[in-house]
Every structure is written in C-alpha cells, then in structure tokens.
Image 1: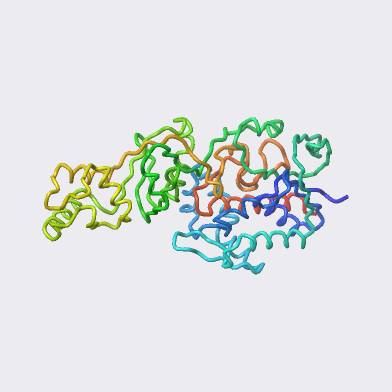
Image 2 (image 1 turned 180 degrees about the horizontal axis):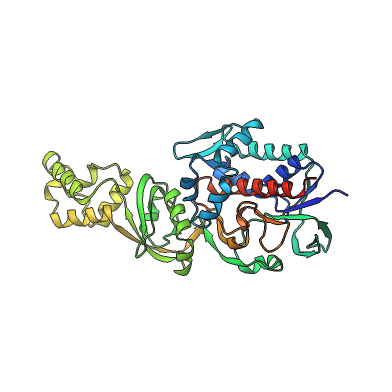
Length: 410
C-alpha cells in the first residue's frame, strides 16, 4: 500500500511541503486539507496583490536577524533552503523574480496570481490531492498510524502528517494541537499599525515620508524607515517592523503607549539651529510657514509649525529663539500617544505557536511525536515585513518534505 502524507493547511508552507514531497517521493500519496474554500489566500493578498516572495538578503546571519521570534531556529533551517534557493526554484518553473530598492522581491509580472499558478501547476503535475472545507479537529496516533478527524466527523489515516495551518489569534484555537503533547507560546498580533484616534495628525492622511525614526517611549524598541500617515494613525514599514519587534511588549501594554517620532533622523539640533540661522539671514522677511528648508512634505511642515505654537504669519526675522527651540524639539522628538492597533491585513501575522524547543529545525519533525512535522506560521516564528515570513514558509515546507522523503524512501 502507498504511504500517505497529509498536510494540514493550504497556505504557502503547506503547499510547498506537499508539492516538494510529491515530487521527491512519487510513490507517496500526498493530500492537502484546507479548512476554508480558498487556497493560498495570503499569497494572493501579500504585497498589495503582487506577492512579496522573499527578501534580497543572501547572508544567513543577516537574514536571521529579521525574525523577532525564532532567529536561531530559522538560522539552522536556512542552511538547507535559503533565499537563493527560493529564487532558483521559481526560476526553474518559469517564474522570474525581481528585487526592489527596499529589498522586497516580487514576480516580474507584479501579480501574485503568477505564484499561485506556479504552485497549483506543480501540485497537479505531481498528483497532490486537495480537499477544501476540510477543517481538522483532532489528531490521534496509535502505533505508526495517525487518525485525523474533521469537523464533519469524517476520518482519514496517514503515515506522516505535516501541520501548516498558519497562526491563530487565540490560544483556545490551538486546542486541537495540544492533544499531540506540544505546548503553545501564546499568540499575540504582530505587524500591525498604530491608532491615534484623537490626534490631529490624522488630518494629514496620505502624507508619506521616506525615512523617519520611531521609538517606543520607555523601551529599547527603535526603528528607522518609511512611514505613512493614515486616517486612523500611522502605518508603513517602520511602524510594522516596530510592531513586530515589540509584539509581546505592546500587547502587555494593552496597546496604550507613547511613541517618539524623529521626523528628520539625518539631522540634529545643532544642524537645525544653523539652518534656521541661515533662514533668518537669507529669508528674514519670509513667513516661516512658507519657507521650508527641510525635506519634509509641505503639509507636515505646516502642521508641525502650528503644533509648535508658531503663528502662520510669523516671519523668520521675528521668530523667537524659545519658539525655535520648541519647533526643533518637535522635529526631532515629537511625542505622540498611541491608543490601540489596526490589523494590516496584507501582512498580518501572529507571534506565537508551537514551542520551538519541541521541533527539530533541521528536519521540522516533532521531538515528541515521530513522523509529525510542522511548517510555517504555526511555529513560534515570525519575521518583520518584507518577505521574511514567506521565506520561512518556503524553507520550513521544503525542509519538512526533504526529511519526509529521507525517512520514507525505500
């Protein structure tokens, strides 16, 4: 009889495990169980519908530093399947990827459908069976055989199981996994935006900045990068990265905290004083609000002037040093209160999952249950925004499949 692999989860990690195992081991029957009616849903929406396949980092240590949880775990697995392997894998199947200035990598078609079509074709080519609306509620193992019970009370057996069901927002949703004997690192949101519901800065919705420095007051959490002001608060890569590194700390604060914004991280107070002194000398009769010597967008410049108490009609010649100092402090250390978060649906991931000390990073196999594997976000691994979570998905899926092949080959 054919050996049977059941992969629980039809996302990136589950698909990559299934198609790789089916390719390596054509004698094995491979089945994907997806609890919803849709496959590869995160692949479809990632990167604004373009699919951020991976990140253009080719040093394992440097790449590993982009994972707030699971750094040492992914570092070990990356030696088997890394960024260059991902790029080559898709290239061999006719999908070229490109790197953008910020390191994110996308298919040259700029369409996530290209990635989905590639994965689906691979599944068809190697005979992977897919069952939709198949929610798993229980896994039991007797001897060498797993029994999988689904929500409709149907059962199926398997010789080997890979759990790639993604992350869950609540600990209670992991309940069906606890029966395997594994422990769960409690889930908390990661990669979310900051809410400033009462702050007037939301009037600047649509204003974007190429580089600002953001710090969570009273912590060591600090990031630099692009930011977008939205109608609910602050978003963009710098905010998402900060939320990833601070996922547990900000959860403990109930998402009520102050942030310190340096609008001009390439400047300091001495340089700004010199700039304003030049403005006094060269543009003395011009209004401060109309003469912007910085790279800040005009709308933000006007807003920060008003927030500093500088009248709209004040000329540089009349600008008191006290107001200038207040303005400089506002530019370099603007303190804003955050009251809540908003899910960034394209990138949203959950911090938490299967405890990593219970899984072998070189095989993705459980240390507690032989022939039980894990891949993707169900593990307590999560990366910052920029393609890092997909790279972990490809890597963990590939490593699990390779290990399954080595364990079951004749």
